[in-house]
Amino acid sequence: MELAMAKINEDQTKPLAPLSLTPRSDQPDEDQYHGDQTKYVHSQTKLILCCGFIASLTMLIAVTFIVLSLTVFHPHNPNLTVHSISFIQPLDFVNGKVNTNQNATVSVEISLHNPNPALVRVKNVNVSFYHGELVVVGASNRRSETIPAKRTVKMNLAAEIDTTKLLASLPGLLEDINGRGVDLKSSVEVKGEVKIMKIFKKSVHLQTDCYMKMTTNNFLTPTFQCFKTNEMPKNRAKSKGD
Image 1 (cartoon, rainbow, N blue to C red):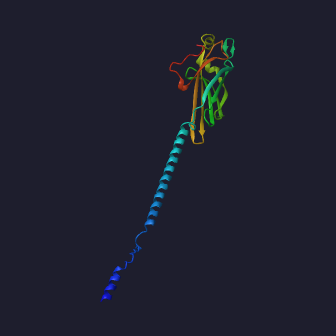
Image 2 (tube, rainbow, N blue to C red; image 1 turned 30 degrees about the vertical axis):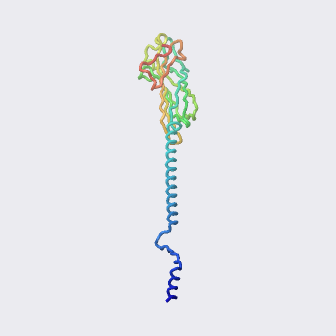
Image 3 (cartoon, rainbow, N blue to C red; image 1 turned 120 degrees about the horizontal axis):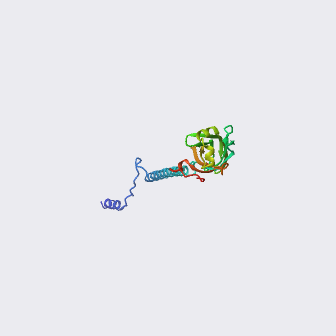
């Protein structure tokens, strides 16, 4: 009896074995879960950065294109200037009358300045002379001219004035030349186009009107005053010789 009780007490005094928990196979590993979360966050961050870079690059290209199209790639009209108007072959007078068998020839010197970074192709240059607003007394045409970028090209145009038409419009031509003078108008018209990188294209149409006064004192080199069509005053200023 005493031996039995002693054995029971000995068993009770022995320490219990440690409790061990075995993870279930159907529960996710915590380290793996955090690793997946980190990879997802990194991928999302890369995606956002990539989208932001593409958006910024697109916006930069668009702004650059707009700025260039309004400045460097914006075609401008050439500058047309009339430098001189003179008679190469003046009117011929025989026995105090105008010789209708010989026409007068007028030389007009002009220049065209190209302010663009590309070529300007001039397709047609026309100069005409009028007495009044309706009667054409002379005309000259010149075609095919190329103006390099940022350069100026000079042209000499020759127009033949039909003395028969001039006398029909102005019967008292000789008396007016010897008196108050004869007023003529010359009109220089330029047509062409300018292309930049074959993308930006603009048609060119320039016109400058010059008002001349011929007298016996300046018959070979008449005085003149020129205006661009968009600069023409409502009340035209008189020529220098008026």
